[in-house]
Amino acid sequence: MSLFIRSRRLPDATEGGADRDGDPAAPEEAVGSTPDATPPGWFGWRRRWPRTARGVTVGTTVLAGALVLAALLLPNRVERVGPVAFLRLPAEGILLAALLLALPPRFRRITAVVAGVLLGLLTVLKVVDMGFYQVLARPFDLVLDWILLDDAADFVRESFGRGGQVLAVIGVIVLFLAVLVLMTLATVRLTGLMVRHRPVATRTTLVLGVVWITCVTLGVQNSGVPVAARSNADMLGNRVEQVRAGLRDARVFEKQAAVDAFAKTPPDQLLTGLRGKDVLFTFIESYGRVAIDDPAMAEPVDAALRDGTRRLEDAGFASRSGWLTSPVTGAGSWLAHSTFLSGLWIKNQQRYRSLTTSDRMTLTNYFRKTGDWRTVGIVPGVRRAWPEGEFFGLDHIYDSEHLGYRGPYFSWTPVPDQFSLEAFERLEHGRKDREPIMAEIILASSHNPWSPIARMIDWDDLGDGSVFHGIKKEGTDPKEVWKDPDRVRTEYRRAIEYSLRSLTEWVQRYGDEDTVLVFLGDHQPVPTVTAGDTGKDVPVTIVAKDPKVLDRVAGWGWTDGLKPAPDAPRWGMDKFRDRFMTAYGPRGEDAAAP
Image 1 (cartoon, helix red, strand yellow):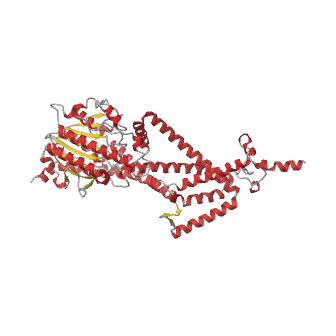
Image 2 (cartoon, helix red, strand yellow):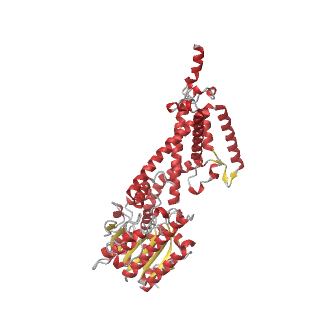
Image 3 (cartoon, one colour):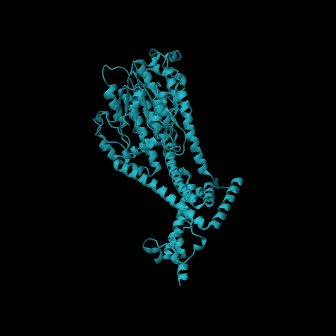
């Protein structure tokens, strides 16, 4: 009898699937043993409902396998996600399985946990990449892009309120932890399954390895996608190279920033062709080439540009337009602004930090250096301390809190463009007995998400902006708009039209013989609007009433009017500063002479 009892208790020694070395797998003989060997589960439910328990076990294992396979095969771009992407053989999974089978129990458990965490982090990185490709048309930079997460949180707050921001942040944290935990548990579970069925797992891994090598050798594809996948290794290799390139880029940029053709030019020889003029550099948020070239938007935007050209001509102004290539697309306005003003290619946050902590002279700095202009900034998108303002050479900065606006935000946009321009007139341009002004003006109404947007009203009715409360209520709901890409594109186009109308009406209403306006887009909009267009071109226009101003840029070959021709000259945005300063310096006067 005692022998019988001991034999009945032997399976309990490996209950839960642990061997004497602490391996999570029990000997194969334990598989299919008596029900008494089955772990009881909570409150003994496994023993009471064995068929249900077996179904849960099988289902959980299948889910674990699907989770790990999805992590290995998930692309990092939304447009590549589809059935074909998951019908591949991941090299990393085959190698990981072989490694886990070869390791002794203690190291196997550690490796399984580490591999699960790394797979979780890889999955999170891929999802973040998807978001960056959707907004910036590029992957997440592991070194330089962390600051953008704070900007993303601010964007959510302005679009959906403080409550929406808090919920979004909590949701992201919970999802991040859940992915790490679930991926780790899934990897450990599959490791235990392989060890319990070691012969089968070994043969399967060997066969899959041979199949993978064969597919690579023969170039086997499914709908144009290679069956033998090694995308994770390639992706991680690219990230390592990205980090190395970032470190090298810091040294390259330092050398580039040290070269400035105008650094030794005396103040009285700077910008001589603009003395006595009010020079306004105006950025229209997200005003990209797609607004002009895309067939779905071209006709109404073209009508707005023709109308603006006519309005300006009726007021005595002429204009010339061309193209600039921005260093960014989708977002990153400050990188484009600093590229335009500094004459350096500011393509990432590292370069921006290096620039704004250097003594590099920007276009606005050179205006201030002459001593003949008061330099001001109208920056309604700035809602907190902006120490970089001093670097850019601005004597005074008017942010969203200092424009006198008492109306509502329009999603991210703190102040409608029409009010920002009227505030500039009231605070600076319209003052009597003032010195000439050089102004940097940011028009933010065309900033993503383009819903709701303001509309034009009589300039005399603007008041303190309270009138916009009613206008906002008439607008669209961003949550509804962003369910439909076509509606997003429509609202984007309407926002661009509003910004253009605000600016051209302001010039028509308040411009004079001494007004010189340079306005441009800072970057293309997000891929939802560009619909696959990866170009980074933006329009740029110079407007002036004094013909001598435009005579100086006659050699640029720009198009008459507010709309640049498709074949109009296209420069890198970093080239504008030096060409502008040359055209309006002493040498430009010689070039403009008949």
